Image (cartoon, rainbow, N blue to C red; front, side, top):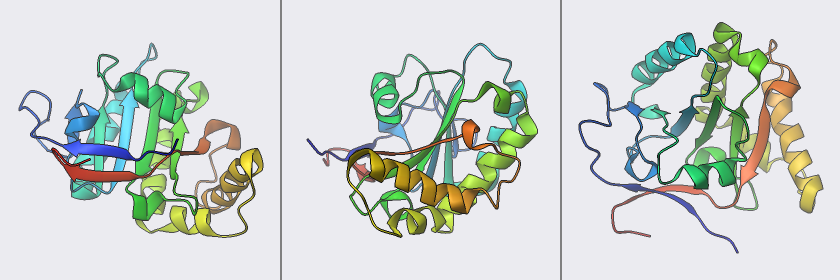
Length: 199
């Protein structure tokens, strides 16, 4: 069954959005700003991630409406859905994706990146540089361009083919990143941000 990922725009409370509306604390998926183009969801774990969190806040503040950074909560009613949709298995984890025009595959799925490598989180400067480069690749249309290029195979071959095509645009730009430190996948459906009440 195909379905769309829909972030429903609702008025977030002052408690959930930080001083800048482009960085949120425990913002539920149904409350993300509708004018954002790229989304970064950070779910903390047992590791010390203070440097990563400071860097992500700074990036969210510098990028304006182009990037929404959310410091997620395991108490988010949509957390289970995020785990299933983005294949979250380890914490801490960063998931990056974008609206359909910047992340859509030819089959209508949404490309996303999952960063959950302990070795990458132990190198906060490299992790933050990776996030910034991935953000720029989404915004420049390079991710969707790579996703749409080439022949689309069926089943597992299609996923491997998609990951391979996208890795080819990432690797020259993010030379410090090992292929084992990033997961490139596609989630069923596409991301659309709709006003509350629309579905």
